Amino acid sequence: MSCKNAQEFLGRQKIEPQEVVDARLVRIDADQAWSLLKDAASVTVAKGKNFRKFTNVAAQKEEILGQAMGPSGNLRAPTFRAGRDFVIGFSPELYEDWVK
Image (cartoon, rainbow, N blue to C red; front, side, top):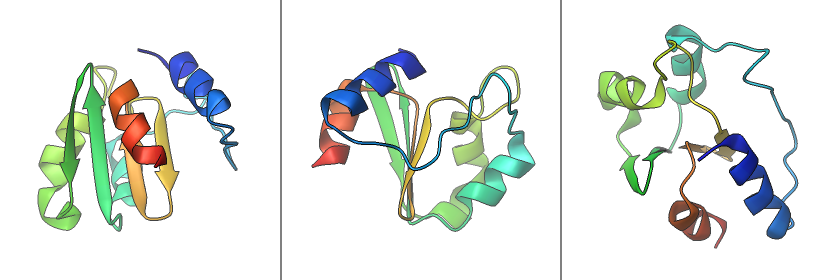
């Protein structure tokens, strides 16, 4: 699933992002990603139909980065922040739960 699927989902839900960063133009490496994620209340990472939620973020740095970083060494897209919660990747089921 792609960022396009995430954008379509958000559009159907009438959710308008406050900020959009094009992952093709702006690369976020592991250090930068951790700077964004380290103070999160939760980080949920979707891969295909599976997803994993991390709630003890500070203690799970390596696990989170292992799931959140793509093969190119950059933060996987799409990545969304809502308050202090992050969702990385796309899963229709996860997004349905997330917008409720």
